[in-house]
Amino acid sequence: MEKSIKIKKIGKIYLQIYSQIKERIEKDKLKGKLVPVRKMAEELGVSPSTVAKAYDELEKNGYVIKKEGSGVYVKFQKKKNVYLEDHMESETFRYGYFNPEFNIDFASATPNETILPMESLKRAINFVLDRDRESAFLYEDPQGYYYLRKTISEKLKKEENIDVDINSIQIVSGAQQGIDIISQAFLYPNDIVVVEDPTYRGARESFKKAGCRIMEISMQNDGFSLKDLEKILRRQKIKLFYTMTNFHNPTGVSTGDEKKKKLLELAERFDFYILEDDGLSNLYFTGGKPSSLKSMDKDGRVIYIKSYSKIFMPGFRLGYITVPEPMLNTVLTRKFSGDIYHSGLNQRAFQFLLENGDWDLHMEKARRIFKEKQKLMYKCLKKIKNITFKRPKGGLCFWVKLPENISSKAVYVNMLSHGVGILPGVVFSENNDNYIRISFAQCEEKDIEEGVKILACAIDKLK
Image (cartoon, rainbow, N blue to C red; front, side, top):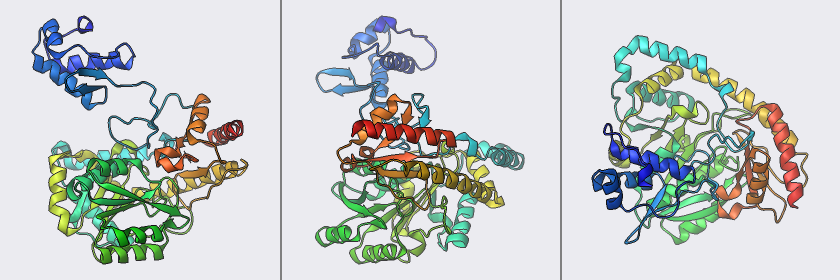
């Protein structure tokens, strides 16, 4: 292998080694055990520390695994047997991003390019560049652009009756980063975290990484099971409850207001915090915007995460968390020690969109478009026999119960063979292999009709 690596004595040599080994692994040209560090270094005429650094980078990105006393082995597999949620941000988990194998993408719950507000964004960027000039490209406040946090605080107060101080708002790059920061700042090994079943896998993985014990409560038609939660609270001291109260991922269920109030009472009574993950409440199709749990919180029990990724531009990577006073300093420290700065230009442009009303116009358009797509997918799904599903009041997905004895993994494989991507229920919980999540976010009308016909054929074939 070492003879096939070409080193230029300019730039960072370890990255040259890393990229060439990575390429060979991805092309399935390299398997098994890598050449030992010292031997590789001798052959290439570089220091052992340079090769070791390249191997470290390969391990960090999931291409190899180090076995103590044995060596370094390739672990990357071109065809993975895991099915992961589409907005997990770990470098190891890439499934669910745009996949060239998909002719029809029911897997990704992010808007396609036809709905992105490009003209509004261009105006915002040009305005910011004219106004702020070089300042837009300097390092931004690690907590986030002050006027973006100010605008968010004002909109929360005006539109949702949420009174949050500017200094309690931390800008993040999306929901996953917010969950990671809270996990690192607030959770310790053996803390008990309660999650809904099913739930977003990225959150579950973050809590596991913190060494927490995870307990699950079932989902009902009006949200999580209060009975299950109260049963746990009578027996265990929990630290955190993670929930998506509006247009829950993956079920689409919204928690009723009475249940939200009861949850807040339990949090105060049993002394635990609630992490509310809100990425989709702006995409409501009936009535007005549903109330967040945070808007009902009078005792500072709710840590609120708002991501704009799914409803604005996925690649823009913007969101925020509101942090209760007791944990504010710890959260800020954790944020600063990791990903310190976010793009100042992006934050300033987005602040302009929020302030001048372009954001509201974009969301009105998004609701109209996605409401029609949901209506069409619902109509098409109704034609399939022996499946069960509800029509959510908003969001981007359907959670479909398959006929008995049909595995979501089998449906996934069959659909993929026809160029259609879905997410199997096991992505969200091992207990949900009889469910699939399908999204209309990426699709045009003809794709929805064709894709659901292929789903019907797959189910019929697997009966």
